[in-house]
Length: 501
Image (cartoon, rainbow, N blue to C red; front, side, top):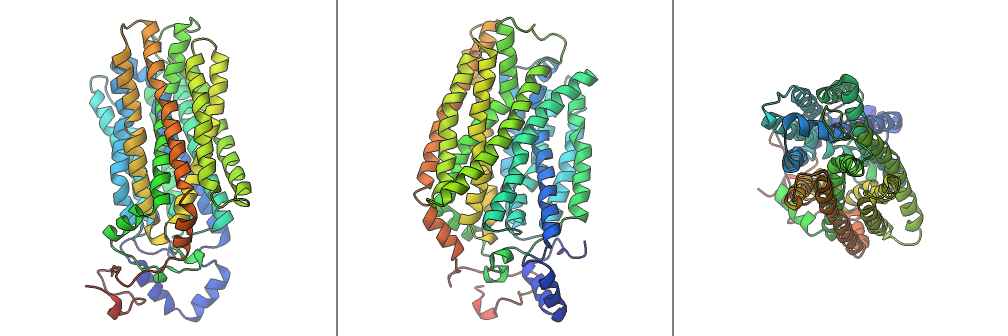
């Protein structure tokens, strides 16, 4: 669109050009919000970003929906199966800081469009992996993380530049509904498409076409908002500082650091359950005699369908209830957000434990406990994102998002699926149906322990949240902070005397 800034331009230069617009700019500002985006287009932007986020997670968990089929097709054990998720998360998290740096400085919708196009093409390519080359599937799943890193790092910061306070929380809730809903659809679409086509490869060919639609919507509907303008602090009052200065400031932001570690526990648990829950439920059914062993493919189609449906419903309930409880609790304490996150994790731990333990006795009880555990776990998604956005100044948000992604995935779901698989293999005494089930059951109990630790980090966050929020809202750059000047010329908003060379 003509109203968006070029990819390799500095926002301060764009603002300087707008100043020259004079009366035309004044008339335009009456029609649009300070972000430069009309209310209708802002709402459309949120729904488009939500649609892409849904695709993001749908693609991520399609593999989990057909995992038993993949294990049989390639003849691999639990450890190698866990690698499928691990290589994806590793590339995703290591590239997140790169896109965080770019997202704080350049046109965000162009960055996302290129990333989503790449992710869709690689996903399509992965569906043609031959049986003899499992490493090709690992490689392509790793490359999918490149595209997803470009999106997940940047999208929440666009929403933050369109809305403030209560409206921002509501819009982030819509955005993060897509995580559990997309994850659930990944299981459902993956398992059912694979079953209908009698070939699990077709499960990976659904999201690429939908990704192309997402790119077109990004390019022709979304408009790049002005960073920080909607918060009555236009970006030229918050000069870009160096990347090292950004990192130093974030490391001293205790609410950001502690909530990131708390979210790491959420990532560990969700990553483990996301990959292994359908396979675990299938093995439990085989162990109890309710299901025949897998011999001809489409092994866990029904388990993936049920688990996917549970994930969708619990995600909607969890995100909505978390936001509502937090909103009501805010009238009593400014520490409501981290306290609700802590409660969600601490309440999910016993229900997940019971779900894993009861799998051998009652399938219905297992599904009930999984439902309750995932509901409480999902209370965190939108709230954690909101915490980051209001304790970090606008010009550092993409970088903060990137490093939260790195830490939470590095210590969370990058290794947890592989770790669960390796522990399962090490505990398995024989290759009987009993030990296939029992070893995976024992290894999954680790999730409850990690959930309790995560709850502790959110309780610690509550101690610092007030001070860090006030500091971000009243942030004024100090004189010794170096200001980044665009390579193509100095900003019209920054006097030469203030620039440290």
